[in-house]
Image 1 (cartoon, rainbow, N blue to C red):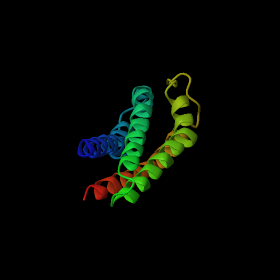
Image 2 (cartoon, rainbow, N blue to C red):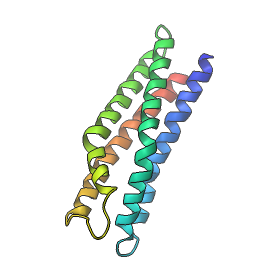
Image 3 (tube, rainbow, N blue to C red):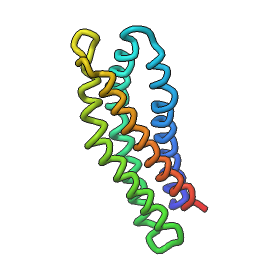
Length: 148
C-alpha cells in the first residue's frame, strides 16, 4: 500500500510539473508567436481552462505528499518528502498570492476590454510562473530521491 502511495504521489506531481513546464516553455512561446489578438485570446482561454484544473492538482499533490510524509515519518527519506511538501506549500502560496490575481484578470480579457498594459501583466505572470516551475521541479526531485 505504501509503495502505491509513493508511486501515485510521484506520478501526480510529475505530470503536474510536465504540464506547468509545457505552459512555461512551449505553450506561451507558441501563443507569443500568434498573429494579432490571438496571443491574448489563447492566454485568456488557457487561463480559464487551466485555472479550473490546476488548483485541484496542486492541492491533491500537497495532500498526497503530506500523507506520504506521515505514513513514513520514521523511515529514511521522510525528510525528503517533508521538504517536497514544504516546496509544494510554497508553490500554492505563490499561486494564490502572485499568479492567480493576474490570471483572474487575464481570463476575462478580450481584445475589446483588455488594459493597455496587458502584455506587461502577462510578462509578470510568466516570470512568477518560471519561479513556480522551479519550485515544483525541486519538489518533484525530492520525491523521486525519496523513492531511492
